[in-house]
Each structure stands twice: as C-alpha cells, then as structure tokens.
Length: 181
Image (tube, rainbow, N blue to C red; front, side, top):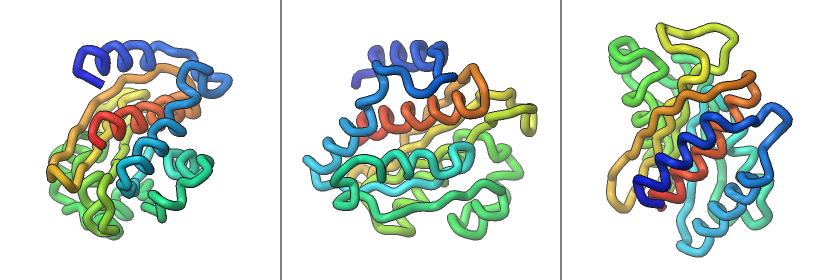
C-alpha cells in the first residue's frame, strides 16, 4: 500500500464506526495479512499494550496461523515493558509511554527477543481519561522488519469507545504489517 492509499485508509478508519464490531469492509484484513505472511514464509510476533492481546488473538483466529505465529507479549504497564521487552526506563520517561519511540522499541524488541521476521508494537490511550498528556484515542503502532532492520511507526487518533479504539488499532496494525512484509 503506497503512502497516498495508506493516508486514505487512516482517514477512513479514524472516522469509521467500530462500536458494534469490525465493519464488513475491514473484516478480511487479518486473514489477508496472515495469508500474505504464509505466502512469504514470514513469522510474526507482537508486543501489545492498549490492545491487551487482541491483535494476537485475532491472528490466532485465522486457520493456519500457527505456521507464522507462536506468541508474543502483553505489556500493559510500563514495568512490564521494561522487564519483558527490555525497554530502557529513560525512553519511557523522556517520551511518555504513549509515543512513537516506545512503539518502535516494542516492535523491534519483540521481534529480536523471539527471533521473528516481523514485530508489531502498539501503545496508546483507550480511555476513559487521557494519559500523560495524550488524549483518548491516541495510538502509536510500530512494525519492525528483520530483513531491512527498519521500524515504521504511525500515529493514529481514533474516536469511539475503549473497545472501538482497540479494534481500530488492531485492524490498523494488520494494515501496517501488510505495508512492511
């Protein structure tokens, strides 16, 4: 997906209604992503904060996913990000936990620690209140590619309930994986 198409996707998903679940137009994205990873024989892992395992659960819902996915991390607290992912406390203190540098560290760390081709990291604020100056709906998603040793991080500003924000973050993460892999 080129930059222009991605920006169009970002605008649409940020405004989309995910209150009742994932809208039909987005429902095949997880399956398409897993199929693409299977086709290219690429493995994936994730480090999740705001989505609390929803991304990994969605991967596991896809038949055949066990060929490309073995597990990952749910690091809801700063302490778990530091302990499990080995993210230096200074990065979190300097940038806040809801930031591009933290999403980048999460994506890269999970892939390297678990020796996988693709690492996805997601951090954000689902509400009900803002966190460290970040408004509800602010989400950073990073995707690391072992082949290029590059992390792409995108910032989103989702609207909706906690669950709608989390669902939008998951679908957006799958789209970012497709861009990288």
